[in-house]
Length: 212
Image (tube, rainbow, N blue to C red; front, side, top):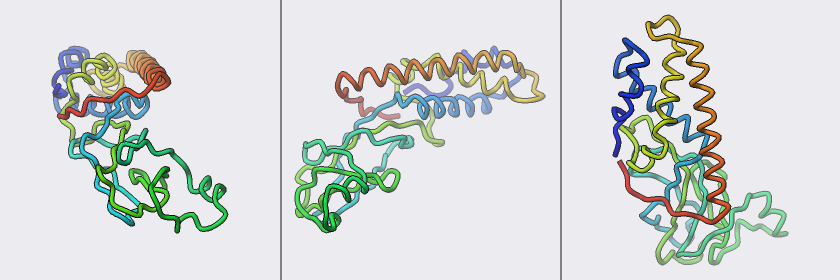
């Protein structure tokens, strides 16, 4: 794992007088903004969620300091479920689809972070529910996994400098440079987002489930 201090040599020389705690805070904020916008950090949760017979919903939780941005794929007992909406299900079935039971083939997301199964499972899952998600670091994070940190090293420190230099009335304030760094940060976001979309169009690539 790379701690936020990994980026400090790229930041502190450009913001003379900035406290380390503040620089660290803005590095975390920059990383959060980057992964929220780019959706470039993808994780396949290693441990399946248990699903009992008659259980409609599964709340996606993490044991590590990340926040869920979007659920990308869901598998139940090794079978990929098809995403749906309640509107689609209502249009597809003339009766009360919520009362249907059987082996789930679809899922919907009425509540953020909660996977709802259709039809209602009639039996318990054999191996459970596996989720692949797009994530970002949480407020409790102390850094990023090595591979993620190295891949997006420049974007993180560029974003932090843009944020710090935009502070008003500080010894390191430089609004012109802040604007330049903000443009470079946005370009990095766009590049990462396009790259992630290209990978997805060629097939799903499993993320490493190694955590901070």
